[in-house]
Amino acid sequence: MKNKIKFLMDGLEFEADEGTTILQSAMENDIYIPHLCYNSQLKPYGACRLCLVENADGRLITSCENQVEEGMEIKTHGTKLNRVKKMLISLLISNHEKNCLSCTQSDNCKLQEAASYFQVDENELENLRQSVKDVPRDESNPFFIRDLKKCILCGICVQVCGDIMGVNAIDFGFRGYDTRITTFGDKDILESNCVSCGECVEACPVGALVSRNSLTPSREVKTICPYCGVGCGIYLGIRGSEIVSVRGDPDNLVNPGKLCVKGRFAYEFINHPQRLKKPLIKKQGEFEEVEWDEALDLIADKFSKYSGEEFAAIASAKCTNEENYLLQSSPGG
Image (cartoon, rainbow, N blue to C red):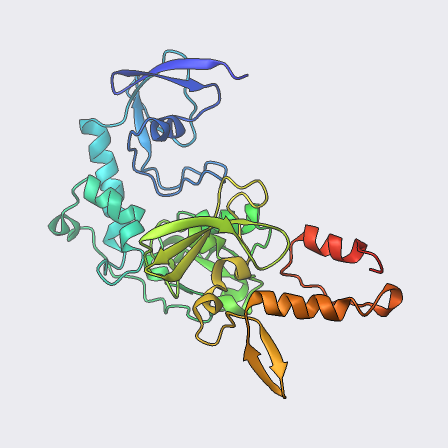
């Protein structure tokens, strides 16, 4: 059992487990500290500096990297701190393509959220603004789009691709003002070793990586991915009667939030007009829809005519591991 640590944040006393970072503690207690590069599944990176807080000595420290200490006094806002953080967010926005109304990430953009929090004024950016990078959008991947004009170089996508997925399809490339996230040889993402898992899309805090079919769901339903026998936990995003998005369940022990390309993107078949919704039985050379009881009775009758080595079955990768085990271990299997 971890030791409990007491500390002050904005004059209020809090308690946290030993080893907890300041940012984690703030989030657990519903205290908003703007941040862009933090991800609970990754080692703290400290790239954006927006999560700066002020300690009792007046030093500005990153809350994502520093742990709470016994008796620590922390300020999440103040004149000096707010001035520094507003300048940081202004510099990020100054060369950022700002088309928030048409950006599919608008409702879930941490850059927009932080800019609103610090009340960044458009007029204040004029002295900082240079030209937006002239980098063409990469639309080669069938499932998501990369728009580096909106990239803030937080590095989350690089960390996720390398540290979590072990693919290393992308990394930082070039230098100085020309620095950007790139593939080997600066080729399109489809020509890289990307496996289209979409983990980088899920982790991106801005609109640099967005799903092609990105609609905001009105509700979510917790369930299990039907594509294979692994049993990954997912949340289906529902709008009306249609599935519009899928995300991994971070609390599921099987996949802790991670998904493959099929689990994340291959859900359109569910609402496809040609999808079979009832069993089909061939009668007089034509397939006819029947109820499940009739279909199962027919299967049972056919199976009863065979035994031992006369019986053969074809399993499916979409069955659970337990179902496939029962099939192969059944009499004659």
